[in-house]
Image (cartoon, rainbow, N blue to C red; front, side, top):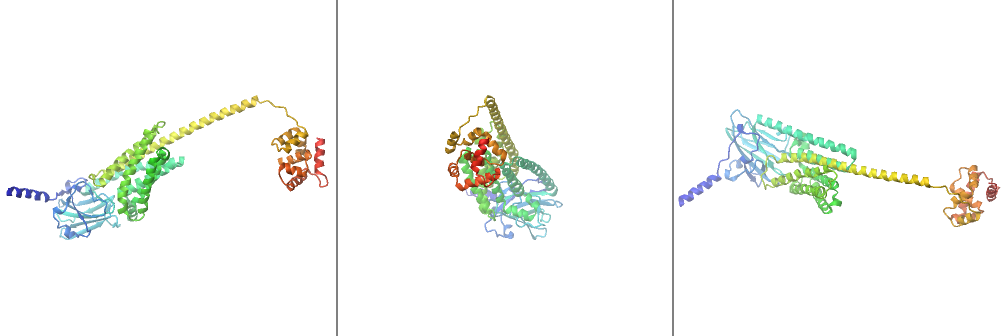
Length: 528
């Protein structure tokens, strides 16, 4: 029994002390080595290399996934790799992810001396070790033939470390291949952006302006520059700015997307409850936006991941409810592509959040899936927007056709009324009847007076064509032998106003000051 216990204990200890696998550099393709690495979390962040290199294998944790995920709490991690190489081979350690605060590579050279190479986004210098979208460290001075190297890593964002250990030809081919694929993706994104800019200038629609903001903020800045590391091409200063304030651009991009989705689907009218949920999400993104104005990544990182997952999922839910269930796309099938655009985004967001939370292992293709989902979304959303514009145009055309038919019917009606209309004989009133109309302030008084005293009015206008309607009306009252006070009462104006009008009429008709104007008007009426 004692012998059995000793054998079991030996097997357990042997299993815990399995030697770290040795990576053969010449046999390596451009693949991540997270599962071949040993990891240790430095709780103090101040443990020197001399202490770490003396740790036994039981101190470390074996990697679970090809890409190491160190979480979002800003902890310091050490990574240990063991590799072998031929004497003439120069190995290169390549970290294909730029968004890391600080990186320090430790190893012993051929003379046994400790070598340290510092890098990382916050410590990046002009002559430091970035290559394309990550960091490269040549290891020609590492003691061989079997060597141990140690990476000390820390970041306040998600600590993702895709490590590759390859020869120079393999590295060059992989970088060229990666850049070629990325150029295709960026080219498609640029064409989508140009399409939306063109449509914005043609339609002046805020929908296109909001989606342009989404493309620039979330694809070009957040995905291409921040996630994929192309910010390094813009220089250390710009790269650090994007790195420190990435959540600002992400939050602003999602606020624009929420406004875009709400306007496109008219959620305020169609789904008021879901619209309120989006308003709450907008407040959350605004909080991230404000906090991201300074380096508050420890506060915003977890909230960004949660809102990223929730918002992307609700985009899909809202579009399915409005377009599929409520039939918004019945008259314009292209609008259905709007739903298809959000499906890959929602699925990839779920997958990414679960990976970042370390619920499932982080795989090498995760960021590629995000890029492909973004391109599919851009194409599908563009088709959906185009379908909506066609629907609006057809609706406007139908409205204009209806208006044209109504106008034609009205014109026909007017023509028919004119043809059927007979000229009624003019009715002449006596002076007493005209006086009664004037006293009662009948609106038809002047029309009736003109019909009865046509010659009198024509004679006045012949003498002075500049007489105004109000002045002709005052002459009509004087023709009916109204004095100044009676005219003032009838017109409901002051006596002075009546006298002022009389003065202007006297000037226009050329009546001298000695002639009585009332007598002159009555004489003109008798003559006519």
